[in-house]
Image 1 (tube, rainbow, N blue to C red):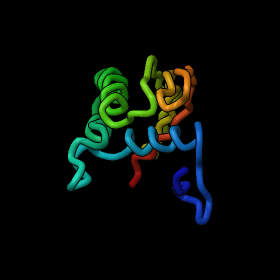
Image 2 (cartoon, rainbow, N blue to C red):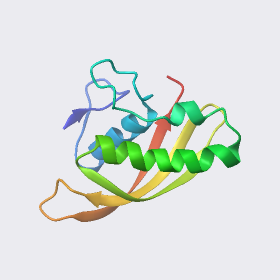
Image 3 (cartoon, one colour):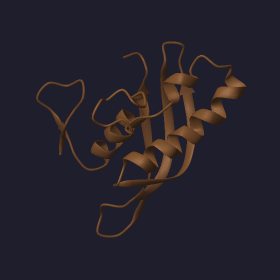
Image 4 (cartoon, rainbow, N blue to C red):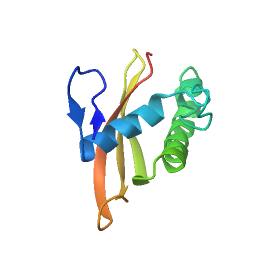
Length: 116
């Protein structure tokens, strides 16, 4: 159970917790946390590139960042569902929950906010 980002006094657990964790990993610029230099992704560095160049880099970086930083979820497919001009992206990420008693495949709809 974790504190829900953006909500005072609320918590998240289960799938919501993992969804929040993945969104945080994706939206955090790589190297921006001093004592955790490998936490985060390079996606913020790709946002100003042309779409045909950025899209494959962003998808590959989502895989890399999740595999490197999450022990509870292993991605199997990533799709960019939407991207808004105000630097918010929604990803549809399929994968395996690895913290359950049995490996269970789930689909997450993850919002990554790059405005921070």
